[in-house]
Length: 326
Image (tube, rainbow, N blue to C red):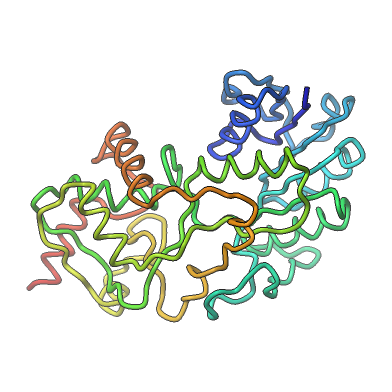
């Protein structure tokens, strides 16, 4: 039986990876603080990665596969020191945010990376992941796989980004919906369950290397059109230009009072990364419509009018639409 350790395993992506391994018949242990239950069919080992001795219990065993999703380079380095000698294969989940440039379309895994943070610096997300990647490669060499996902979407998404659109269009019904200028804008998404399946598959095969785990690029107007059809929206999409949205303090990409997935002009490289390696390795990319349907079902279950971590409240949106049209 394959022995798998997932560092985390109770979160959104890490939990699905743990489930995939358990479904494949592996003996799966999840190392987490214990605030949430481990997935069905797995075992929880309680440990806080910010505390001394976090890995003491799991360092007593040999592991066929270890999976780490952390964006804290200190935690990643400590895990490698404690467990690296006990791992037959290691999969680190990084991000396409490690790339130095978002200007050039079609870049593959060989593109230049951000410089890791120096001593005493507080790294942003991309630089933190770049630093963690460097630690993994240095410690494990040809025993490691590095997976760089783009925008992870699907049921349970804690960021509320992708689901905003299909949920908002469903909520609006025959009403107006505020959208950004879509010209030259797009997205590149991967369903969380497709990603989890890929991580499990390359771990099973002990594949080593680096792969962008990203979907095919899709123009933002096409994404919104498909979301509109899935949601049954019959109202009007009302576009606003970048200057107007910025003036009215609407944020790009994510977070409160934002229009999710909307990117500044000139970032075509961000949503057109090459996924050739992912496809060659057998990575699945389900149709966009299927992911939208899954996202809408999840949005309805969680509540279309709930307070969100990303997007506009419906009341705020209506006020902005009024300002735009007067």
